[in-house]
Length: 102
Image (cartoon, rainbow, N blue to C red; front, side, top):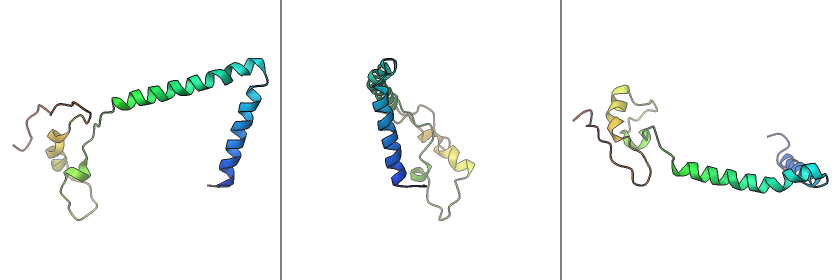
């Protein structure tokens, strides 16, 4: 990146300056007081959303057999992997569909 790593420090100094300037005016001081509450709320929302993370795509790299080339698996190989797709979260049940190539 341009101006790296000095640019990183300049950005942090600018943000610190904005934070200090927010404290001078009564109207902007309210935003300064609410900012930590907003950050905590965002962090709680992020952590809550991570608990319900569902993987909707199969792990093709681990489930497919190596072919020796870098090409993706064909459609018939993907269809064979379909019954292996399950919700990857604690307490998830096994898929109830029958395997395609049974």
